[in-house]
Image (cartoon, rainbow, N blue to C red; front, side):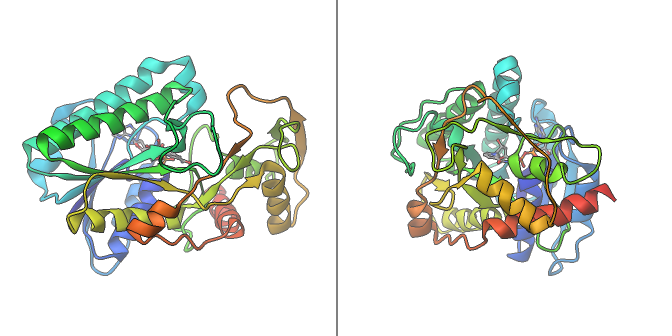
Length: 332
Ligand SMILES: NC(=O)c1ccc[n+]([C@@H]2O[C@H](COP(=O)([O-])OP(=O)(O)OC[C@H]3O[C@@H](n4cnc5c(N)ncnc54)[C@H](O)[C@@H]3O)[C@@H](O)[C@H]2O)c1
C-alpha cells in the first residue's frame, strides 16, 4: 500500500488515480486545510481495478497523527505532496512555510524510520533553482532559491540526503515546473483557494462576475514580452510518480529529476490558446511586472526521460481543455 500525503489536493488526487490504475492500494493522509473532502470522497468511491483507497484526516505537524497511519496500514512507500506552496504568502509569512513544509516533512521521515518504511517520492519544485543562469534548466543548475517556499523545499531535499546517508531512507525528488490541466475523465482537477496559477485564472475570467484577467508585465526580454513558463500536464506528472516508485522498488538510489516538457509558452500564447479553446473573448488587463518573476523558466527533462523512462505526451491544449471542463463542472 502507498501512503499519499496531500492526496486530497490538486496533484496528489491525480497521482492517487495513477497509482490505482497501476495496481496499487492507497491511503491518503491530508489535513483538508487546502485539499477537499469532496475530492477524497470521489477517490474513495472510484471503482478502479478493485483497488482500495483509504482516507485518514490528520496534520503532519502532529507526529501522532502520522504515526497512526503507519500503525493501522501496511505502508510500503510514501508519495509526499503535503505542503504549503504559495510563493507570495511564503514571503509574507516564512515561519508558516518553515514549520509546515520542513518540520512537517521531518515528522513524516521520522515516522517512516520508526515504522521501517524506506522509500519516498517527494514533490520538489523548480523554485529551488531560483533565478535561472541558463535555459533550459537541467539538474546540475545551482540551487539558489529566492523565496522561503523554494528554500523550504531545498532544505527538505538536503534533509532527505542526510536521512539516506545515515538511515538508508531512499528518496526521489521530483522538481516540477508549472503543473496544469485536470483528469481527462473530469473526476478531479485544480481547486485552490485562492487560485494563483495562470490557466485557472485565465479560465475564471470566462465566467461572469470574475473580472478581467490580469497579465503581469509585457516588457520581458521574450518573444512577445510576456513570461515564458514550462507547462507540464498533471496526468503526465502523475505518471512520473508511478515510475519513480517503481524505480525505488527496483533498488534505485536516491536521485532528483526535473519534470517539465523542454518547451516553454508565453503568457500571451497561453491566453490566446484559452480564447481559442473556450471560444470566448476573455477580458484582459495588462499590469506591471510582479517582483521575483523570472523572464523564462524551462526544464531540461532528459534525465527523467533517460532514467525513469518518463514520456510526457499531453499538450498545452490538452491541459487547457481538461482544466476548462473541470472548472465548468466545479461551478455547477
Ligand atoms: N501546483 C504546482 O504547479 C506545483 C509546482 C511545483 C511544486 N508543487 C508541489 O507539489 C505539491 C502539491 O501541490 P498542489 O498544487 O497539489 O497543492 P495543494 O495545496 O492542492 O495540495 C497540498 C495538500 O496538502 C495538504 N496539506 C498541507 N499541509 C498539510 C499538513 N501539515 N498535514 C497534512 N496535509 C497537509 C493540503 O490540505 C492539500 O490537500 C506541493 O508540495 C507543492 O509544493 C506544486
